[in-house]
Image: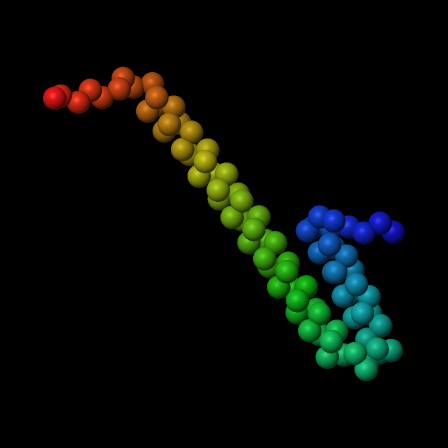
Length: 83
């Protein structure tokens, strides 16, 4: 299987691995502490990915809100300063 390079792809692989560890936790009792720590890391990574998506959406929304403003500003005549 080729190694995933995108953040979302790697997160998917991590989630799959975490789920596999969880499913086999009875057989892997000797790594329970590490398994739960890894599950916590995966959960936090999911939260960060959601935050990044929300920030990107907010940035895009702000940019779209600025577009009409900048369009109106460029359509108005330039201000002339008196000397």
